[in-house]
Image (cartoon, rainbow, N blue to C red; front, side):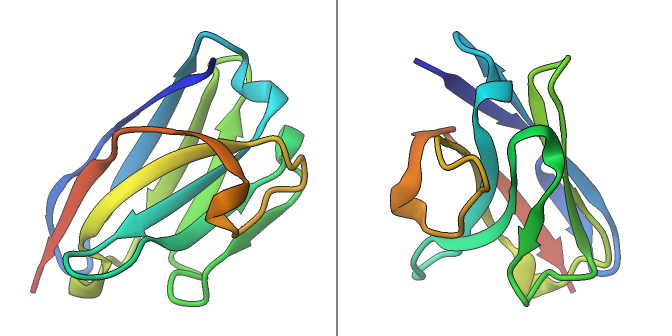
Length: 124
């Protein structure tokens, strides 16, 4: 089993930045592609970003493209989401996930492991 734990969430003003980190344990995160999803109150969970094995391919939701950056450090067993130019509509619980689809994917059903989530709140 791969256990995932997110950190780095919090409260930030619009236009600010946050850096979310996802630490894997139990198995090597390097054996999986990674992804970030988010869920706002009253809404369904939605795709944010994904990164392939070894980080050669990334993909983003249109709503965050150009503002968010996903990366991975296989030596540290982590996947990171750098979030810049934050907007109030980015407010949500952010979840880290791992998938056996080596290219990464925006389909949540393809992810095998999930973290507990971390709250991000952006004030206007």
